[in-house]
Amino acid sequence: MFGGSSEDNTQNSSVSDSRKNVDRGVTEWTSWFNIDHPGGNGDYERLEAIRFYYRERVCTRPSAMEARTTDWVAAAETGEVVHSSLEKGFWCVNKEQPYGRTCSNYHVRFHCPPVQAYWTDWSEWGSCSTEACGDVGVQVRQRRCVSNQPVPLLLVPACQGPHSERRECSTAPCTGDRPGPVLGGPGVPGRGGDCLRPGGPDASSPRGPLLCLSL
Image (cartoon, rainbow, N blue to C red; front, top):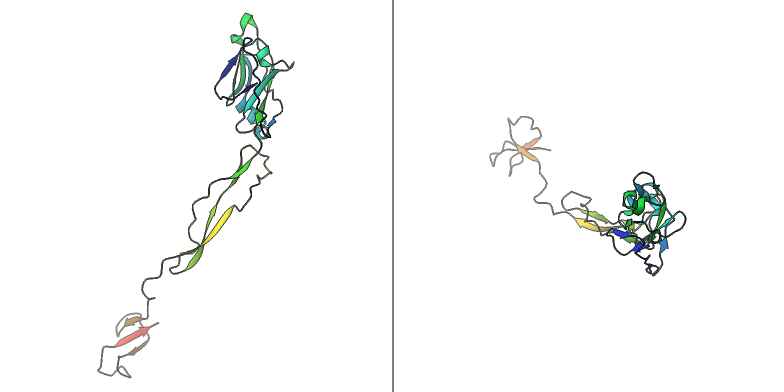
């Protein structure tokens, strides 16, 4: 069984099968995987290929790996030169074996931590729902519930709490008054409406300029 480091490990018959206690807490082993056979260059049980074929069965970060032949002989007891990595998987190369031997047919399994769901960080607050000046709207921010292991497509990780938050927002106050009636006078094209002189009851009064209101 291989565990602890993500660096490549090489073992042969002089290296014992170190059985470290990885069963601390609630953890579990995957099923056994055998996606390659020792013909050609050797036997390659690469983690990338295993995830391709069995995407939902292998955790994101295994804590240990065990390799045995299909006759259930531990890899360290075969006398073969083998390699392992928690990031790459397990492989045995035929040309590296002593006395012209070829690699055995291996299968592997991985030790995974328990499935844990957790929230991502909150996103930034979104823009205010209103753009009108002097108005009140709403801002929203969100977070996602994710798992430390792949989960089936229709199974949603369960996290406690809301996935979104809302808060009130307000826009800047309006500056100036709304545009009032258009002021004009005789001869202004397109400007119709009532005309008057301030301070007088009719347009013939000599007091003040003529004002025409067009609404």
